[in-house]
Length: 185
Image (cartoon, rainbow, N blue to C red; front, side, top):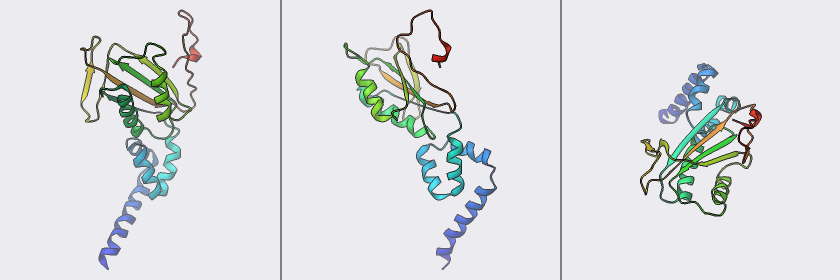
């Protein structure tokens, strides 16, 4: 009989503890847990369900990097890990790519298509090739590819973000010298 009542006692004491923690503190704790963990917690606790709504009003950013040999694999890896760190919706994705051979005709078409498959349709995607990148890999170790990477060095860094009440507009081929600040992030 004690083994059956013991978990309920623990569960009740945890809920009582959570009820004592101010929402502002709990929100900061939850913000670092990642979407999958918050979703599970929300199914177990009404207070976490209420916090999910509050989380959607807080700016949030998550990033991940990958050095997989194939560009599609690197994008899947980096986007997947960055998504795990996001809480709620995503407004934009910024993707930095270095060292991969791009198609000569419309080099970004397949990359954008792949990103569209992994991200919600409303996400503004900004992509660029760069001379170098830095980030953290799946094992948490940092890396840097300098402005002149070695022949077989390549990588992808992805930054996902949510900025409540902000409008993100993606522009292409903006004429040099003309700046329209409403179109810039």
